[in-house]
Image 1 (tube, rainbow, N blue to C red):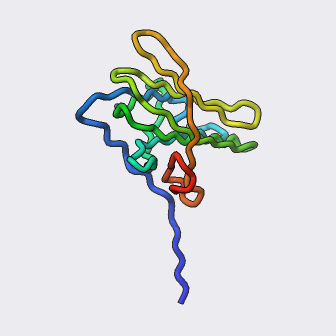
Image 2: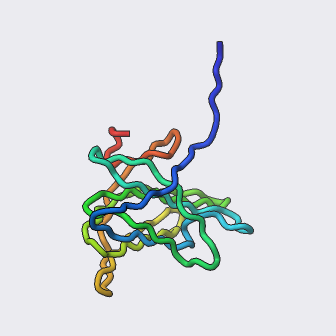
Image 3: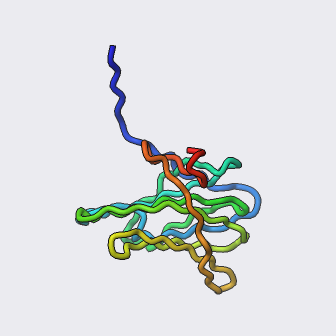
Length: 156
């Protein structure tokens, strides 16, 4: 007997934190989704890491012409896992990273771009009008479905 399984990875919608201190993850609509008429696609996924350093990526909000950015309420003192990918039809690149959200009320602004043939990802923390580039740490994405990410490859 042979069984065939098929389908797409589905991403659950993000459910924001309701209690406790939080920060805001700000994502430019330029890096959140495919646009009609464009040649390629750009996607960003993020997850809140659990105690084991892993999380399941959530479905990003779609980009719109009216909305220049999408904001997500995120908990502080947690690792945020990020997956960023760009496919232009000529080249494909992707990068996974993580950062630790530490400051209540801060905005963590995500910026993704292509440099040559590689994806580049930066996160800036904005507090009291001051912007600071924060260090990113490696993260690893499940290569089979792409829905799960972890801070350590062996935890996938």
